[in-house]
Image (cartoon, rainbow, N blue to C red):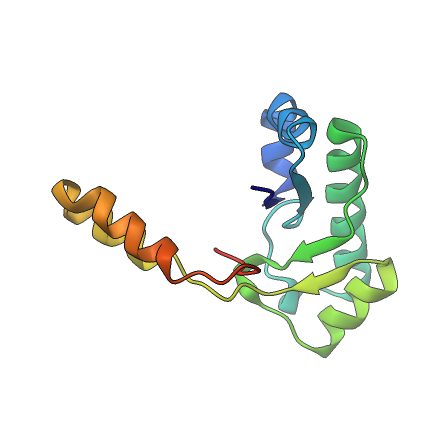
Length: 130
């Protein structure tokens, strides 16, 4: 199964071999920003600099430049979308919030497999999971 991993540039700095391994395994590695800042509060110039930094790091580790970004915190407005698209990336949003299941798993460890299975049974082919 092929997946797309959205990674933060700071994580790429710590684990470049993992980024390369993901790419080498046939997975896509895309941007989730350089430092996980709130894009809605940044200027266009700051967003552009952050995108460049994250994409440069991912490309250096994987050999492939990202074409997508999942904005930190899911925040975006018209100025964020314009800045992202002007830089040449496409912003995406997720459609499945898995954090609730993670919380349930942590509280009810004995039902861990059942909870995970139920979460993934509800996914569509092209679902984007956070």
